[in-house]
Amino acid sequence: MNSTNSTIEGSQELSVITTPVTFFISGLCFEHCLCGILALTPYMQNCCRPSSQHTQTPTLYYLIYVLNICALLYQIFVTICWFPQFLMTEASCLSMNFINCLLWHFFFTSFDAFILWKSWIVTDKSRIFFWIAVVCILYRIIWGIIDLVWSGGRWDSDIGCYYEQNNVSAVYYTIGEATCDIVATIGALYMFCKPENRLVTFQSMWFQLAKENVLRSLASLIICGIVIYLETSSSVNYQILYIAYTAQVYIYTRLANTEIVYKRQRQSLHSSSLKGRSSADH
Image 1 (cartoon, rainbow, N blue to C red):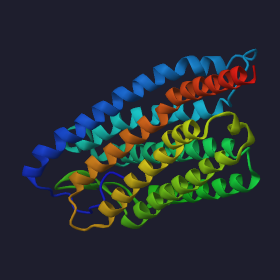
Image 2 (cartoon, rainbow, N blue to C red):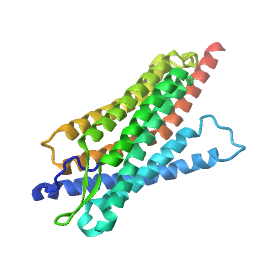
Image 3 (tube, rainbow, N blue to C red):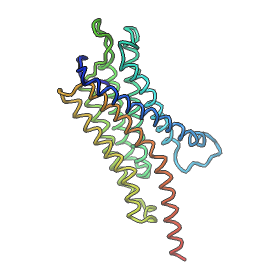
Image 4 (cartoon, rainbow, N blue to C red):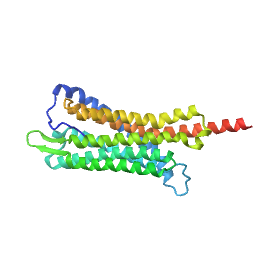
């Protein structure tokens, strides 16, 4: 999660570069999470009203909301864990790193659930796809739990608190994330077969579908591939992994929050196609 190297000694020269880069990305992520929470608040309030008419299940917004909260809290805890010699004691080392790791897994599980839920909806709630998605999520959750057990904060009398990441669990829970992305992409492609999509031009629907689902899943797969490579490479410094993990959280948060924009575009696209069809009939 935080570092796949069991050793803590890092290059002082490299730290001069990686530390500001990591915190710059973390700051961007923190800001984007706040904006996402504020943008989602009206939707959440509307979903909580018993008399409101939902055109889309509020579960999707709940997942994005939780995802943003977890990412925001993660940025706070990872900042504390970044300076263990100043901000953590022997008593708080284990608990702080555990919470940090828990937020990490909760965030990615929420993102995986989000993209799988969205694809399940467009498959007309296919039972086959549902159970495949459940298996993928359970796989990700199981390896997340294993990672919480195998990895964690360690205290050394000489260097203080540090995080020790288990390489095996890190690779397998990342593979779980990639599997969720692949399954979600396959489910998104099913949208082509839905009869109601014939009301929309093929070119417009393809562009919207690619932008929403396919490109989002492919971006997630690329990030997962990079992270898996870095995690399995013994020559990669743990500070480089900090940058990769922070960038992964930031990119995933942006991918999830674009759902609000895409929703407006879908509504506009569908309305335009219906107006064009109505004009053609007359």
